Image (cartoon, rainbow, N blue to C red; front, side, top):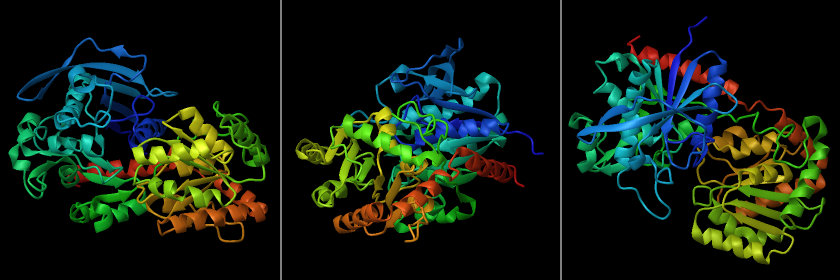
Length: 487
């Protein structure tokens, strides 16, 4: 039996403490699955002032070399919910106590390079503070992509020199690009500022440097691992990804199947399972009443729970609302983002009668009620590294209608016309394609209820928890250690 590993997750987000997207869900769930496999797993995130948690204050602060001096940071400790996985909060009020994770609303943080390099270098100082040397640092996206850079330079000849680094790409579109004039503030050596390092178009590119220097790289779905090797999906870094292609693995995200479980979900009106799918309709009626829609069992209810931005294709949804409602469906949208899309949705919601409602903002309990109450779930993303909401919807027997990209293509099986599959897929992102795909799904819902029931049962029986992915990450960690130690 292989020996257990010491793994430190270092990230800018971790649900439920701080979350802007799927990255936070992964960091909040995967460590628990790895802990269940016997590994010593810990998490480090910044101490944002928005975090509400019971914490233990470590009495001794840490002095992290940064900005030509030492930044004194406090350390607080808490636990992931329903687990004994430690979460350490790096506390520096000037850098992290700002009421946001990355940038202020409609603004920009000019010191994000220093903020997140402090987090990255702080990972090594946390190890010293705890007298604990990880076997693997698991880094996530550009905010902690500097960890492999520090590991290969300033920490190379320290006790951390043998630690492997695994960099997971959640979204290649965000790369952490900063002025090269800021580089001395990070203490990273200028020897890294090369075309096969952190230099990118006369600027510092953290993600690019991390891709070159990490022991191994993962992407959050197998198809996304292929897409980031292309011009369309690589966002200018496809040549780096192809250079490191032998060290790239696509590992599909899982979901927290204890939190997202229609048998026990405390947020929904009526519990049900795969053997009592007919009870699901009680959640539909409750949602219709809550959102002041016409209470009708005979109308398919289509849901959207999403950030409202171009990546998610919600601009196309906003343009298609009129034709969609002409299909005789009900439409519910929950999300926030692009102001023009928000305004369009709000206007339709105000004039939509009993057919359409939009909730601008985000409400976690409402997202559960929508997932349980809807019949169909719409996700027309332009690109989607993995996506979690289509997994949640399948878990609840709410069949997804998705554009076949990235993890959406990996996780949704196309309806075959005979009752097989778990959803409906289309390829061309346009108003016409979206409307026709919803017409197709709504037609099956109306005319082939036995096919819908078969697809719901197939969806709800799928294994979507983190246990499968955690075993794949086990392999990745061991491979990364072998690469790091030259075997």
